[in-house]
Amino acid sequence: MNTNNTITQKLQILLVENNTTDRMMLSKMMQATCNNSQLKYAEDMKDALTLASIYSFNFIIIASTIPDNSNDIGLIAQCKMSSGKPHVIMLMPDARPHQLKETQKMGISDHLSKKDITPLIITKCFNHLLRLHQAHHNRTVISPEKRLIEIEGRLKTIISQLNNLLNVEKEILQDINTEIPVAERKAEQLIIAQTTKAEGYLSQFHILIAEDNDINRFIIEKMITKLGLQMTFTSNGIDTITQFTSSKFDMVLMDIEMPGMNGYEASKTIRGELKNTSVPIIAMTAHSSPDEKEKCIRSGMNDYLSKPFKEETLRQMISKWQPVMQSKDKNN
Image (cartoon, rainbow, N blue to C red; front, top):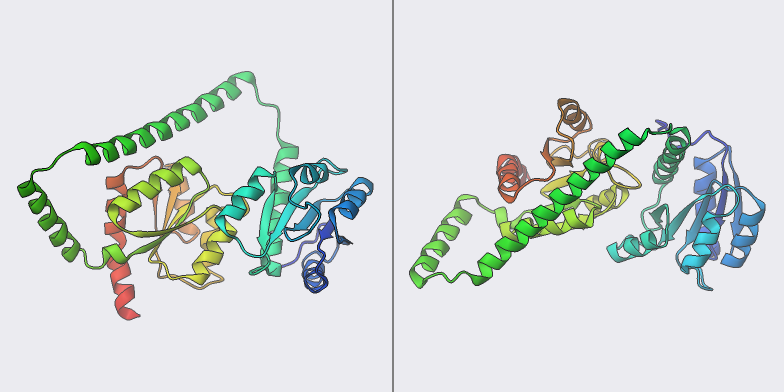
């Protein structure tokens, strides 16, 4: 990725936007960011499809507010299959979770929020998709034996995730079906009250969780709920940065592999551009090698959790960094 805010590679870009003011603003950003590229415009999907059939675009950027069925999956698919097989990026008024799920179903390569778009974010988005395209182009043929090993590894990960999910469900059912005598219930409540008092304001913690896997999100949500903490979920690095700047969080659980902007880049942005060094960032990764841990630390993270992890492991990690958060709160 370039260290500045511009892309030197010559690109063909199509901007589909019917709002004149937004189109002018976005055009200036594109020209500043991609100063060696050709930018064409369309005000509706009909014109966009015509241009896509003529020119070989690298990127087609479509505003979600475009009328005449701009959200139709068939139209988006035609754009993706046009000359050059471009990356299709959706422009949204904001980045609400339900919008992200809809764009993923439509096969959108990535999304940008009009509310928070900047030349830097455009550069990171473009560079990320260009790297993915180059990696796919340069990929070598994998032997059947190596492919089988990769498939076996993925199946083991899926089985592990499903087993973790089943264990969470079993714990929930046990909590529902187990009848606790009144005396034991009162003793349990007393222990919970004493623990809460000893741990201070743990129940007031607000954790930002960056995770794009639905199964992992469900498992983590159950764990955090049982711990009595507040939580907000994001599914990619750009959305994580947006949420981090709009609300106050006591900790960030950061998935490493996410679309748009990965966990390393998001952590570097928080530490560098946002100049926030006080909020602990904990990596969540399926890799547990020393090199992986060192890479997480270099990107600005404080610690890491190896997937899949248990509720007790998560509790211990939060307790480990609790003094840091208490000290930060007192200083504020």
